Length: 122
Image 1: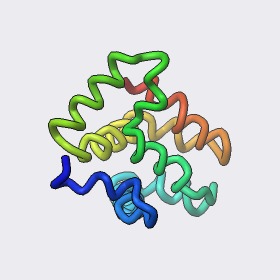
Image 2: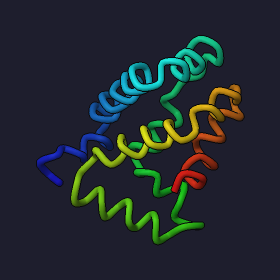
Image 3: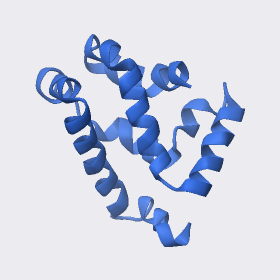
């Protein structure tokens, strides 16, 4: 884990968090261009508040109370395979829920991505 530099997610400059946020934005832009346009042009939301939590907690915050065994499994995969599991899960979630995401706006969209989408997809 030390070699991955994951501790930089939590440093004062949030250097790795910022790099991950840029990567997630690029993944959405290339993999889900309609959703990307919906997010940034129509809804005009800042993705950082949602995705920062996802990056820092690996979805575990959203799952630990209701599905502790799934949260533990995600953490296990993270420890073995590294941070790629976060990006893989996000891409799968967007692929499964893109149509629903396109119908949501502003706070409803962010709340859905934060609270319901991980539960529905796992």
